[in-house]
Length: 124
Image (cartoon, rainbow, N blue to C red; front, top):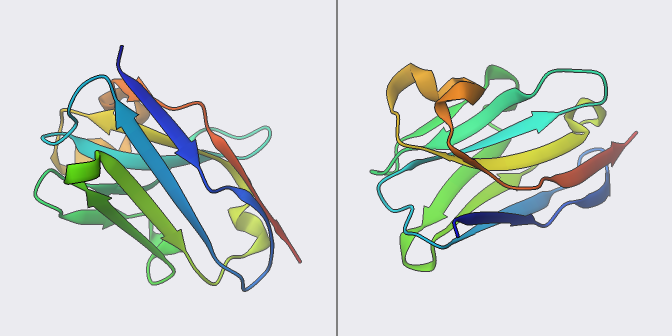
């Protein structure tokens, strides 16, 4: 059974850092685009970052220069390093996989598999 499991969330002060991990199992996600989305209370699930099968990253404008996405294909794991965190980054963060590429990967409907989410809370 295909599964994505996020970890690394928590409570951090503004300006701090967190590193999220997403471990994939059940199938190889080596050829997929892997993405991170986030959802704050009462809001839609928004694109944060993605990384293609050939390690090409894409970021939402608000996280450029602060967040870095990477993947370790040997470990079937994708990471999201989050630095200079702001209170507005507070949300549940979800990992997902997609067989699509290009700008479509910023949309939730492009993704086939989703993790359960991990809470990130940034205090001011």
